[in-house]
Length: 219
Image: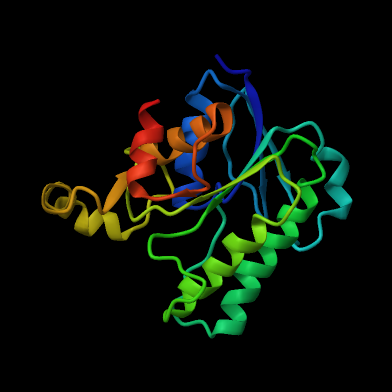
């Protein structure tokens, strides 16, 4: 058994965040979802509350509205394509840690971070190192628990509005990819369910790889 939870979610204007939010709104385990965005999403739902806030590095002006939540599902993120390490680090490491520090003031807060398959703080790839440092330093904050999710290929949820345009052209490849490399990715629905179950039921490792996402999604 588990107690229903109230969740803070970022990234709802992107494919991943919208997909995870969709699962939260469907789940009986989630009673309220607070989405924090830089611009309005246009979403409406009885469980949903939205705050428009431009600066994720400074949440002082909305700090009192962040109290009383059980978990933060941090799904905001940017691509490393075309970015130097300093810029990518600012938009990934610095922004995430500043946001996390603000919500960590909730005494029972669980933080779930969307990282990526292949993340390694000592890796050769720039994005991998930045994500790895972010994962490691999130674990040092005073959360009840931190879970770093490392999804691979993410298959979209049909009907959602923020699905990347590339899926419109290459969606026909998805069944083939699933057949040839079944452990290379998960559906957005599985990711969302896995994050909810990690918060409500817990999991025995803080680093959640693709295989763990599939396990958690079925619990």
